[in-house]
Length: 277
Ligand SMILES: [Zn+2]
Image 1 (cartoon, rainbow, N blue to C red):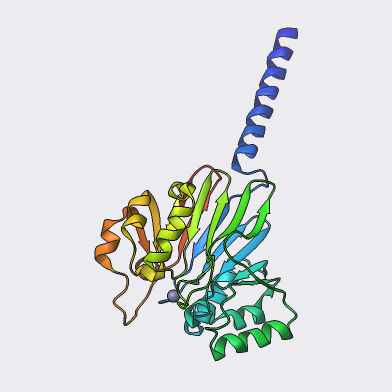
Image 2 (cartoon, rainbow, N blue to C red):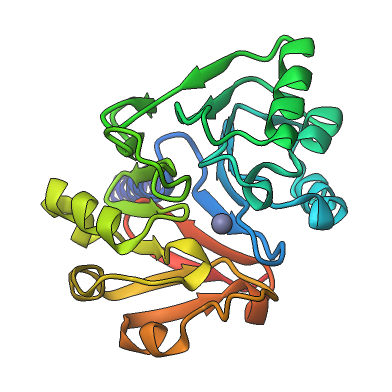
């Protein structure tokens, strides 16, 4: 009888240890990170969905606004904690007015490039101010947020503004435990090289967004990232992008939003995988 009780206690203890390990392994805060690259034509819109926080990097243009709003509703998004505008081009900020109408936006993150702001961008900011939404301008070295040492969203570029609106794009680095993602806006090869020289950790990124909708990429960029998941946010355009020959030089899995539709990646903190649902 005593032996049976000891065995029973041992099994219970083992079950408790297993449960603790499994829960602890999934995430300290109970769920994984999902990164959604929305298919919004020749434009960018990326949602970082944390268990208790949502970040939207760019909104795509007005043209695909209805789809983006529906996509966010179907993901049960009610509020956007940080809305990041990488740079003031319409296919990166064009739907944010509708995002403000449909969701609670808690803050906007922008670069310092006001010189290149067009009338649409100024109109958006009249709405942002009317809605009393805080705006924070950031540059390389700033941290958008960091949580308990598990998560970091940091700005890698620009250091100083140039005459190129694209090169002034906010480039961000998301680290979630042992995994990381690089979001590149529309930067040219010159800025790609500057970023790569800054940090040797970048080559460990699990997922890399190919800059400028699959535009020109530097040899250093191609060589730095081996065996990665590359995402190209692109659609029909008159510029001949993405540059197919360059995409073929990349080492890893290349996923295009114009071919795959919305692309969802998930990180459990150890590995990044493509989600098929
Ligand atoms: Zn663009």
